[in-house]
Image (cartoon, rainbow, N blue to C red; front, side, top):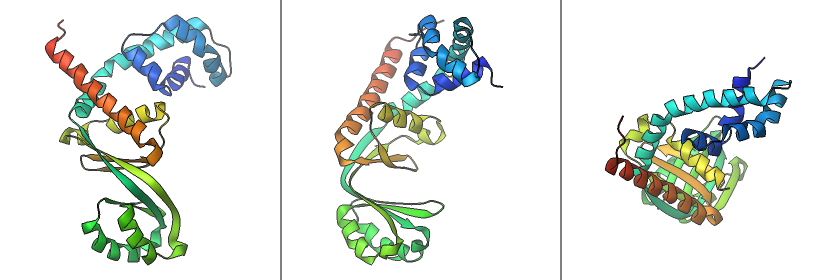
Length: 232
């Protein structure tokens, strides 16, 4: 049987906004406890008191505060990142056995492609190309090997410092802020220090604005901390 603490953690960890408020000390624990008490009771299958939920929230908040340093490392990576955009992108998903002949012609066209990325999964391979290169490749594919084609996509390439490789939470942070702003990620790929996020062309402006807003915010926050370091 899960404990009240575990149930509260499950509820709060699913809401990044609440987590951020708790980490920064903006939370009214009594009000939050009253708000989530019915859900916690439902998860446990028994009625729990608001006071016990409040105590679990306070304990969870202490843990969040201890983990704040990790989030600061995420902000440092974001602050040193830059963003590039590629439009007119096509995502082609193929059955895995198509790899046997796809590699040959991809190796020829990718050298001149404006944008190209390939990822292999358990049952499929995904090829992300600019529309011009895709138009050259599609006639070479067997129709029975094509699982899906997504057109009118755009790529946002986040170029980060080498620290991203050893810093947990950067990709999760980016995915969370996009989700909070109702931006759907159709494809995501990590390539060394580059993070490639593919979204529908209609979502490009919003996604770019959101990502840049958080990069700028990270830079400003770190600059403030450098100018006004806290002591004690």
